[in-house]
Image 1: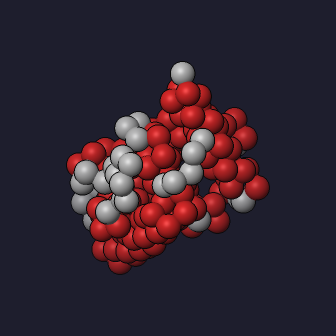
Image 2 (image 1 turned 45 degrees about the vertical axis):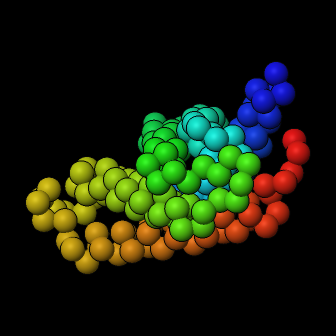
Length: 176
């Protein structure tokens, strides 16, 4: 029972942080602050364990979609998919520490891959596919695609490092 209550508390707390960041910061700028969302999702995966980031992504996506009706479906899908990717890469790289310290390099790898994928997919779906940027699907402008991947991967690296540092130094011994 305590484990379930802890999971709900962490999910609600972290989802509300994602909601507040998406609600008070306008859409183009909020996408640049993906590192904040990445740290929150990584900490959710570390605190809750399996499917922690997915729960936070699902709940945060629903709350954020309600706050932005025009972008609601995209906000929900990308936030939920991001949480799912974080959990998937945490499993692939075996980054869940349990009771021990988190392996910083594994957390960084998990966050780098998940952030790069969600950054590129959201760029493609929002800008390239609808024709906002005039390109054919095979001609993705290497400069812009490379920039999106570079910024997303950099955000993932910094978020993974920050989450692992916070977990190992301050958060792993917290009793909830």
